[in-house]
Image (cartoon, rainbow, N blue to C red; front, side, top):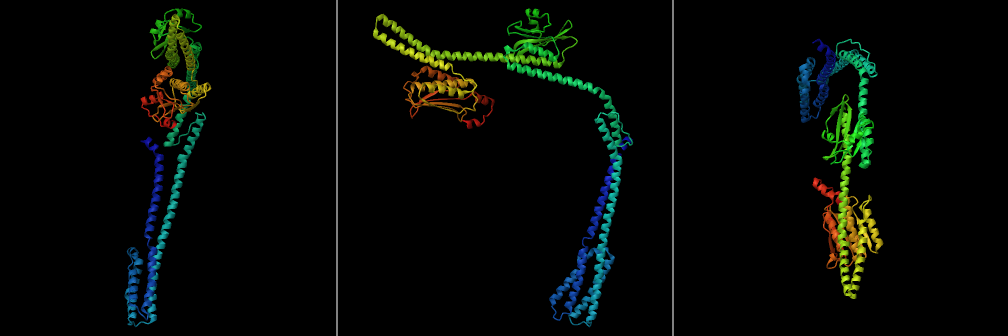
Length: 623
């Protein structure tokens, strides 16, 4: 209870002081309100009582008037009677005996003496002289003056009381405020200044200063707590530098680990996996984790011994390890083995269920790896595995691309040179038979056919070579198209116009090369067979977000059997269109010439549709 009382003393004192100030203010406000409420109608009462004098004189004038007006007299009499009965006099009659007495005397004098005499004068029945009437009025006016003066004095007394209350309240408030401010200064400000000074000294590293405790209130308890805290800090400060050093070392380790992982990832990305200096990576890893015995073994999926082994220079068993079977390491992945005072850790290089090798770490049995060291080795292992996996995927993609291109070359050779050579072979057979029969006409005809066939085959060979040399570098499809069109313009006099509206559409390399080949093949057909003067090529994205291609000339149009005109080129174009998921259409235009049209959905649209992502209308705007 003593502790609770002491802890509440400042709060109680401040609470009592504030309650006293609030109570004093409320009392002053209530008294002031009460006084103002009582004096609210004083001025009106003075005005009403004063008006009785004017009305009395008016009644006297009307009474002695030689030309009496009964209505005016009656109105004036009713008005003065109403004034005498005004409710403003009721509070004074009930609460102020002196005012009530004066009011009664004046009212009785009016009703019993003055008003009856005025009525007699009005009716010519009065025996009083004018001097006597004037004396009656002056006596009545004196009574009214006394009434008004008494009401005025009462109002002035209320104002004086209001002022007195305000002055008393002012001095009482100042007195209470001075007491409270003095108490706060002595009991609160000075202790707080001491606590502030001690806090500054503590912030400057002085933990030996103590505050004298002179009270048991809250600030005294706070001062005691400060003293205890200062002693506690002084006791623990000796251990703080050691802890800071430990944290600094941990942060440095984390920084070195992150730096190593970043540089390793950058090194793997910038170099071909076959050209990576694994020795440097393992060496830097060992320095980062402060372990000298690290071994890297790279293996094929089917192999049971490493094709590349990075071992410490001090390991005398390196050659022996290369010759032995590695099945033990592979079968004990993730297991810490302790042999002859050495702990062996094995970290597997695996990615997508494919094994690329492992990293072996050997440390003293008494100095096992800490969690951050194991985590860093595992992260480095994962980075190497990812790099090798990406190389494997890249090699596989290149193999598939080569196979696809070889298939395309084989198809085009089959549909062009192979058929041309078969035709020449048939003609050679005819030539042999004609030679046996010595048929000169047939021999001359076959010679012409051979000459024409060889020319056609040579022309097809050049076209195939040009097609095979087509490529799209980093400049994109538009630059490749413009380059191809420049080559075509140099070979003939046809006006070729290109409208390219796919600058902001992401096409895959496969889509770009197929479009380039289709456009070149169709343009070559128009140049060779249409006989026209103009060729318009247009490539854009339509409202359905599909890529549209049109190639139109103003030549002679398609014959009855269009497939006979460069049939192998048309077949290859249709096959390329099929690979892109579309269909190539040929038709005659009403204005003359051939129209080649093609439409397909690009891969990036298909991916968005499969993902449930609604493509933005920006592509329609671009189109």
